[in-house]
Image (cartoon, rainbow, N blue to C red; front, side):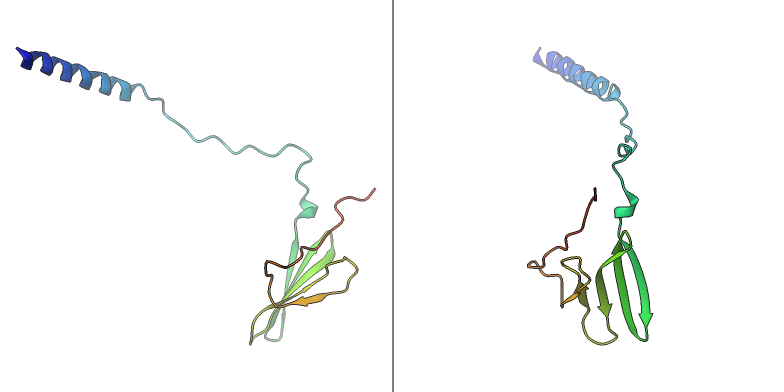
Length: 111
């Protein structure tokens, strides 16, 4: 007598499981939300100019037209960086951008 009861319980459990799977909503990815107006300033994106001087490659990094870093990749040896830390045009050489590297400071807004 226990066998029909167990069989009915198993069938009911299977029925509830199948109905629960059938009721699942179909998920669709949400579109990307654009940033609020005025929050993205394309002039703050760095402009990178790549110059080939002989066999050396020179990359100049500018923000709002002001040169703040140069990366020189010679045909032999490792790359090195020339960085304007104070914004006065004096470049200082770095062999790599290591963790003790000080990030250059730029003027964000002028009043």
